[in-house]
Amino acid sequence: MLSSAAFLFCLGACAPERERADLVFIQSAEPETLDPVLATDQVSMRIATSLFEGLCRINQQGRAEPGMAERWDISEDRKTYTFHLRAGTFWTDGMPVIAQNFVESWRRALDPATGADYASLLHVIRNAKAYSEGTEKDFFKVGVRASGEKTLIVELENPTPYFVDLSSFVTLAPVPLATINKHGTSWIKPANIINNGAYLLEEWLLDDRIRLRKNPRYWDAANVKMTTIEVKPVQDANTALSYFHTGQCDLMMDKGMVPPTLTQKLKQQPWFHTGPFLGTWFIRTNVTRPPFNDPRVRQAFALAVDKKRIVEKITQLGETPAWGITPPGTGQDYQAPPGLDLNVAEARRLLAEAGFPDGKGFPRVEYLYIPLPVERNIAIELQAMWQDTLGVTVNLTKQEQKVWLKSMRELDYHLCRSSWVGDYNDPSTFLDMFTTGNGNNRTGWANKKYDGLIADAAREPDIARRNMVFQEAEQTLIRDEAAVIPVYYYVGVQFYHGERLKGVQANLIDDHPFRCMSWSR
Image 1: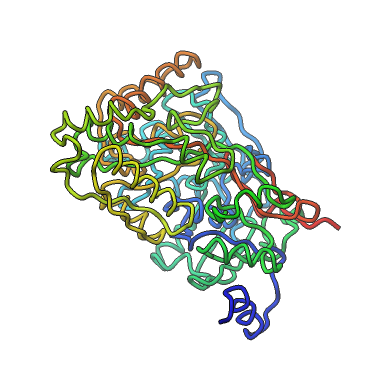
Image 2: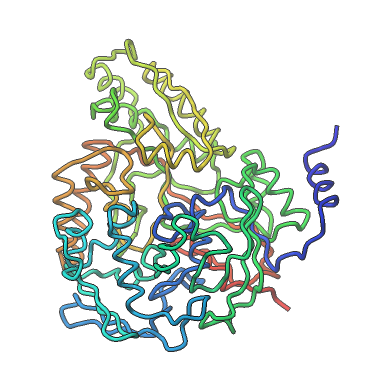
């Protein structure tokens, strides 16, 4: 029988020849969307940030730097930002990028009809939250306006120490409204798309490849070294590794692409790179679905998880067990409060108190996971932990990434694997999303105390006091209510030959722009 690696080689050899891209990159799934306002997962955002650029952009160190805006002024009270856009910035159709493009794009992001899960990021802007929730109908009262073609003025509700970082996030990038109005949801197809980033969308064949080409109209095109990028979705970790070994791919960066059986050997290879970043692997509970509408049940399930066993037996990349949803040291030395750790006796007591002694009478529930080997292994381990400790049966359901995202968004699950990578370096990027109605909440959890604490933190100028407010909020989320179960803090993974490929660098937000990459000579 032909091996899978040989079979893939034959397919490649028999396929029609096409020019190899300067960089071939494998990621673990097909993007859900390339619309920067609708993108919510890392797979989609990697492509969207190559096509669209906001006021700022991320460099290879993971830090924000001037993008479409060459500079900005901040008022004395730190609530008004005046961005000065560059001369010589254009859309791919040759039209100039102007301040009004940002005003219109942010209005689209805030419009509930758009369905942007990340709209809440803009709520730091004056009256933006009221507009997106429909209590303020007049967009002119939202604190963003153009002053001429190249000046954008943004007024915030409160001083926001991470606003420059936020300005580099893809949700805040401008989009071509005329093109969207003309083509509807088809505007992101290669034949229709107009964009302003470092690359053009040359080709998109679903479940096969995305091909990007350097944008000659990009303001910094002279410093973009890779002319063509090919992105291939490959879900099977062994297949992806075979591509890398045979030179059919140059770079992989998805944590799930590490075959668990090869982890120890891979860690010894010079082309295998790891580094810490702001990311947490956790479990969401659907609090709207019995029996998880009872916090005692959620707490029992959290207390039954042996986090140390998962990182030592399964992930094996040097991850640390997570005591909170927010990684240690996020922002200005924020430290998460202790959550619920393994406690078998307390887990059983709480489940019995909730009416299910030794799991008797507990309904069958399901746990959703995505089709990666490490995720399957974690799912099996969790299933055994919950069975052994609580006496409950948890069915395992595997879903492709797009379906899994849809299930979470629609609350069509009981328990669900999840993860979050910080969009910027501040506790709010982890904690804001669990406020009532936030598009990224995806648990159905709503808590007035929590909402009030998050609002208080946004208004608090003193960093130490702000951190204390966040800690109280996080304790409510992970311990008192156990709406989510933090399991471990991520370690970033990159497969590449560092002596040849330059511009890839581990950083706190796990963002690696293609425009920064080049081949050494």
